[in-house]
Image 1 (spheres, helix red, strand yellow):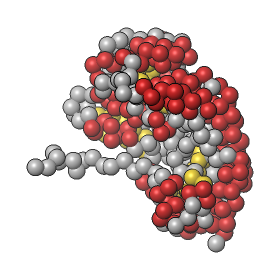
Image 2: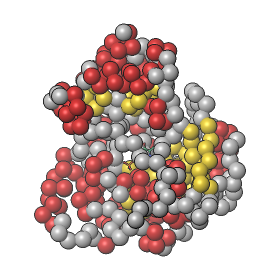
Image 3: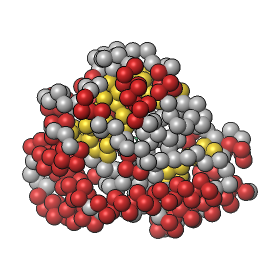
Length: 362
Ligand code: PMP
């Protein structure tokens, strides 16, 4: 026996862990700087680590029903009802819940190209079909016209702001315009996974008077909790019982919820993380000897196509890795001439820039 025909599905290409790369290179992991997965270079908030340690002895019990404490805290933070907070196993899990809640078999979604691969994957898992809207290179700021030009009544339109991997944002007005000009039965899903780093505000306000916008947020980036897998969607006010109907039992682990609660209160850690990223993205833009796209995320996209031809991103990323700095080759995003470099600590960022400039020079 075999699984059903899965040829329409692709495997998610996660960045390789630092230990794995170190093993391949035969070096100590401490000798490597990983700036490939937009993780927080300051790590996890110490308060969240403590919460995980305190929670660990109790994990033989199931999580608290409905994760009430964290949903309440997030509702407080966002000034909405707790029923509007759909906690999940990472932002990816929240994307799944939204696809499950929205899509009937054969429905179509509209995703950005280039863009975050999981939107399309998640829609396909839920028997949806995928269309794309093209982002011109460089397409900054991102505009409503770009999206609407390719819109054809899709059930979900995904907007990433700040966008991964370009770092550009949609203005709140542009997002509202997309919502206004798409059908009543189209959900505009605004992915604010990198929202803490952005100069533009969240579009949370749109939820107050419309029922066709949802927002995705995550604890993986500014909160430094990528490993516990915790994210959530903020959904319109009258979707009350949909979450209970689509979520996996115990949608987030107790460790994740406790860590999330503690991290949410540790404003100093988030502020430090955001400040470093803002410094690092400007520093990289000024100092890298290749075109760097303006970014409002915790990463920058660098066009290295001028140096090595079409295979440039792969070779540059490989050479960087051999020199001790792991960055992301954006070929799988459909950008074969570009690499994405995550904002590191100040020292890590300086090292990355120096190494990249050396690689670009040779
Ligand atoms: N959206 C975007 C744009 C992302 O880049 C990511 C992570 N790479 C996510 C959502 C999901 O992140 P997570 O599942 O770790 O919350």
